[in-house]
Amino acid sequence: MSWSILIVDDEAMTRKLLRMMLGPAGYEIFEAEDGLDALHQVAKQVPDLIILDIMMPNMDGLEVCRRLRAQKETADIPIIILSARTSSHYIEEGLRAGATRYLTKPITRQEILHHVREVLADVSVRTS
Image (cartoon, rainbow, N blue to C red; front, side):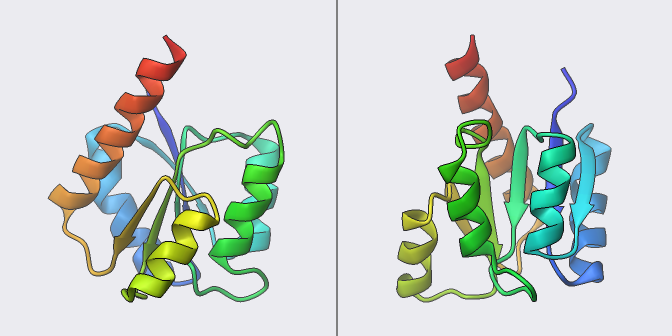
């Protein structure tokens, strides 16, 4: 099975870096440049996983997370927040908003692949 991942970050370089880390591992990658774009992308095609930044224009990642969790069709999509905000306050806020995991930037290829695989393995177990 080919898993799809939506990468949501306002920094084009971060999106490119994540695409380079995840694409060769066989994941189908989609991108959104801010929170509003992310909601539009999800409405067109529901991904298997979302990697979401917090600090973005138009709508931040926490609000995106809350909105996705509030809709029946998107409530169960795993969401990994990947943020430069590292304080425990932000981590708690991200998890309260509904994030499956909260990871901090910078991140290595091995770390992101490990977390993506673990989260998607949980999805496989729940849906089988």
